Amino acid sequence: MNPLANTTAGQLASLPAAIPIHGLHHFAYRCRDAEETRHFYEDILGLPLFHYIRADTVPSTGEYCPYVHIFFRMTDGSCLAFFDLGDNQLAAPSANTPAWVNHIAMRVDSVARLEAMKIRIEGHGIEVLGVTDHRIFRSIYFFDPNGIRLELCAQLADPQQMQQEQEGIHARLDAWSLEKAQRLADISAVLPA
Ligand SMILES: [Fe+2]
Image (cartoon, rainbow, N blue to C red; front, side, top):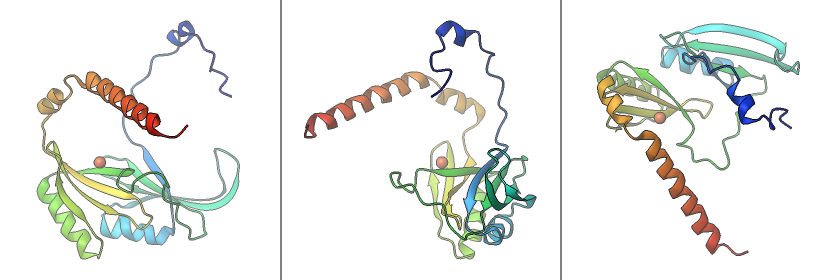
């Protein structure tokens, strides 16, 4: 049980303010095989292998589980990281989430570079979806060898347009919450008791 579950509103108000969180340090996921994953990220996507950890116990939990942890660096210093647990097993896909939902999106400089990467990735025999126009950016989509859906995107909208996009954003989210509650109520109304 969460020991803070009974924290009062007054106690919450006296907590330290949220400090700035600057960006992605790394995203970590299970991989089937470290070398297979290195080939994909380093040789095909061009993200250099930046850091390597070989350990037998998990630092955070103390659990015994021999593994290799590898990091691939993007130009802003953030990384995609993977654990090879030495068993050639993929992480099981989510049983209740469509394959297009969970993904990682990474930024490239321009639509021309996005299109060049599509040609490069397809040339390595990997299926690529897109270029898809999202109005404020364009994207391509493909899967890594571990079943992770990846997106590369090129921004179209400038900061001023992005500012305009934010107008009424909380009200629009509230409207979705209401619509969703109504949909769920409609569904439960027709379900047998
Ligand atoms: Fe996305």
